[in-house]
Image 1 (cartoon, one colour):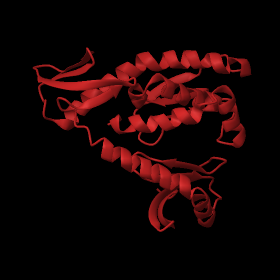
Image 2: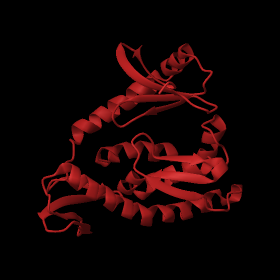
Image 3: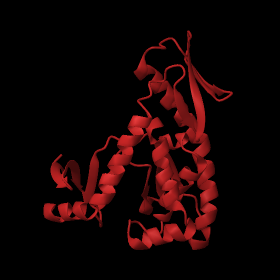
Length: 243
């Protein structure tokens, strides 16, 4: 796509590949994805030197987050949904148990995620079942968190619940379209404990008032949830389990 470019920059003797996308937005945004890719979006008029200045200013953040992701990958090897693998569901540790069966069934029982399937050795097939299970869990769980979080923003004029969607996403935990009054939440939040999900939901609800990532936006988030940075950091511990 003509508005997406891949470039390379050196930050403190470390070569970094970054994906730069020009979009109809007002500010420059930076994301470090779980696969260690650096993604940056900007308004169409922003030049590459301005982007690289932005990346240089935020180099310590970028390098720190990349280091944290790599450390987590060392501590938590790839999960293949084999028997005795460890995963998390709503922040609760679960042990995987895979059994051969004529039909597909996945459920929890006494801190065990039971996977019954005719294809117990097929990683992709088991993951598709697991994703379906996460969607079912998120469908029940996320509206409850939204309802609870609305109480926090109601004094600031948000009285009507926004439209809600969920989908599996690789690069973000949530998104908001203020003029449509719609928020989208990552299905993988079903992996996270409640205090992490509460942060993501509040973050998106606050965009209904501040539709950007300005200093005013973050000041508003901190006013309502003073420990939001601690909650956001805690999400890194569960990120490796979002398979």
